[in-house]
Length: 274
Image (spheres, rainbow, N blue to C red):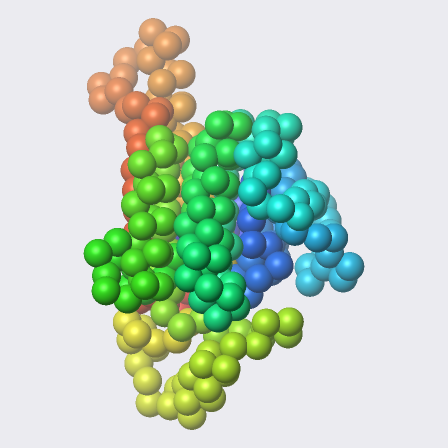
């Protein structure tokens, strides 16, 4: 990952702007992600998947190069049906969708949101041509974990990683910091208070350090751009080969890669931006 300037100042004069699609766009990370993607200016259109109309968007609706279009799906059980109407060829797909067992109301409901809906979203956008899936997971995610929350996160990672995207990027934050005006979580609030007290003595890149939602969003924005560059470089090499010119090491365009970014990796990558 690179610093903030490498994302916010790049140009797209020589390459047609791709599109992006975001689910979980009104959540703690999702709102920051929309803001970061707009700031980057890399995309022509950002589709934001939400359950209900957003009366007062937390971010501006447009900038000079990017527009946001809201896709309202009251029942996420209909994700595949509704998203089938959208051409997402070459798009980056971001999922910041997540809940807690308390918020969802039961283990079954939590599993449906964090696993089933995330998987349905990934399958749907893949079918519509998305190239890169970027997922917010959690520190400790493990399909074999004895902790239900971590096990669900791990199963979600594993199942999405089986889909043949060109790239899958998984982000595992620790405790998320930020304001949830419509979703108060007592445990997070207490932890944030403790963190604010201990912040001066806690190493900036300590692996278990709580992380600001905006830093996760910035990390995702950076990685989407860097993987996009890698894809375009591979395409350029293939185009050279097709023209009959010398190409010593042919690079496949479709090379399915799964990358996992730890909490510490995100802290280090965004150190100079905060």
